[in-house]
Length: 65
Image (cartoon, rainbow, N blue to C red; front, side, top):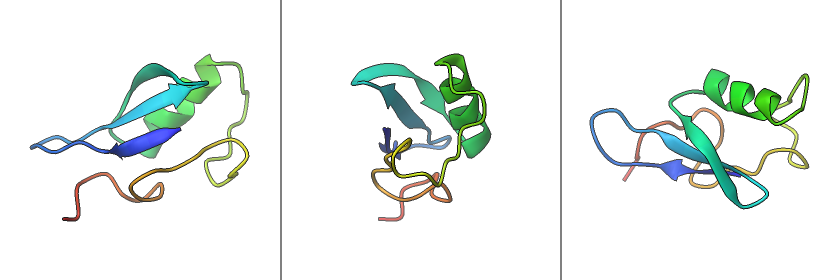
């Protein structure tokens, strides 16, 4: 699960795997790396069975409202 972007000058998105926070990402490349560390060799960020996006898709990294 990729949570909504935080507020602030350098927003990030919290990444959770099975309900446990595994890190913070400031871009899609960091989400891929966190998923790789969890054991998925070639993660597809557009696969809804693998990644759930909250507060925007993989293109949203700052608050829009």
